[in-house]
Image (cartoon, rainbow over all chains, first blue to last red; front, side, top):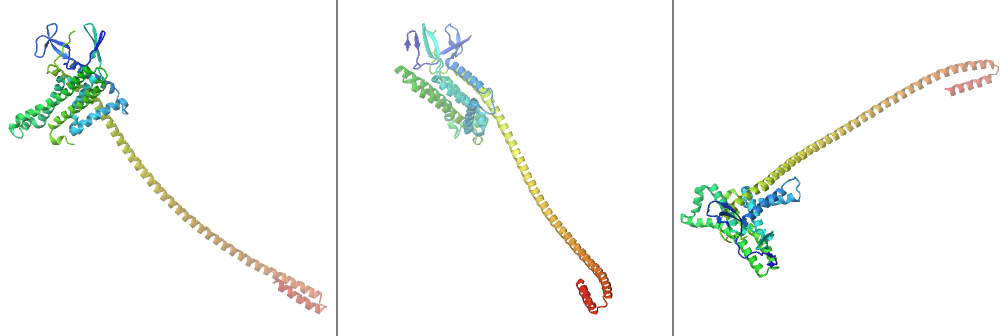
Length: 265
Length: 168
């Protein structure tokens, strides 16, 4: 939308994350890109910067909330204690007394995905000039709308459940488990294992990205009023549901690799 | 400024960035959220447990004191009952004693009074005898004085006999 010298960018239909800056490298690595000045650099996209902002926000939020803990909690402290209890209850329900091992990972996962999904619901306007025209566009981009984020999280989850399975059953036991019920099934089982990270990463990415695409379409069709309530659905509701789904699936996969009798209460 | 846009769907170097970022986020959660709250809640749990134990001990002490007090009250009641019974018995004894004494004194007094009466009686008799003797002497004197008249003498004798009878 253009109004004189100011142009306000509505969310684009399909656009990849833009590169904010490059970290210059002397040689051309496989992931390095050519910069404007002819050198090579590792790109740092808006997704990564948004993640840094979110990490900084979490850090500041915890520092602010958990500064002076008192025996009789105030409203602020009660909120944080409730949050802690919610996470604790979630992992205890799933893992029983072994929940303590995973509570940090699970709480970081669900918080990060939920907040990154609803980032686009609270857009921070960014100002820039293109050809002498002031451009106002959302500064941050939802990190979960980038396949790299969701795949990264899925890989960490995979590392968690595979390492847990190896720790529980030993490398021999784990390999043996992959060959069950008959060794011929090994490729099938391997595909099954690979499907797990693919499943959760694609599900989250697909939802976040599709939401963005649909919103872009809506902004193109009816730029002013119509998209507003749909932001509630695609960003807030969908974002929270998907964060929960991702976390639950992660917990199910991890639980599947634990020895049966150990996590039962 | 021309913006460089990465492909919308593509795996690139950002995958590693995001993995590193998430590991940092886990660290932030562990160090700044879970550890302080966990330590704090543990402290609170210990404090509450300590206070509960303390309260339990206090309650037990109070119960034991209460029991002791009840026992003391019971003992005191028994003692009081004993004292009252003893006092009653003593009072009864004293009453008996006093009554006995009084009885004895009365007997003694009666005996003394009887003795006195007997003494007085014998004394009165003696006095009467003396009086009668005196009277007889007086009469004899009168009879001698009035010997000329026999009749009169006889009357006087009757009169004397009557008087003696009355005195007796």
